[in-house]
Image (cartoon, rainbow, N blue to C red; front, side):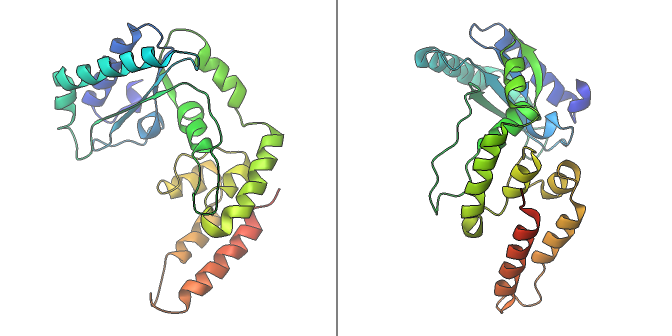
Length: 234
């Protein structure tokens, strides 16, 4: 497990969190997520952890667990020590229940986080602690990808909104791969996850401008639309 952590204090802090939550009732799993889980973290990286509940856990019990953690995070010196390791090193801890749902869409709402949530919390996470098989059941439901009917529906929705503000999702839906982010890790996602180095090279060109205030914006938009029609196919 230490291979996931860029420093000893990242590993020590993750162990401290795991031991703390493993003693609390109604915690079904402690999951390492994001860059540490994928082995991409540096000493400056934050430590991303997800605490998994059952969906039916009452809100008051969730609130009690969250409030206790907030006090623990404030008073335990290891977390203050950890913040000194790197530029952005801190504990980024989330509470989830595995009930992944699609959000409502409108023209200006942007992308929802449906695929991101499943990707980071299930597909690319590493369990540090499990009290039962709930996490494994979630993996059996969502991996390697969600149902074909849902994929087709999502793809049609994405096509409809894509020219407005969703150019980043279609490739993942088309290729049955969960994304890890929409605004970073672009090279890793296109080359390592989607296996599309040619598309990455094409997108790099989209970012290169000879003259920013020019007709190039229009030309880039037209080129993006061509790439969309070329790669967003069922």
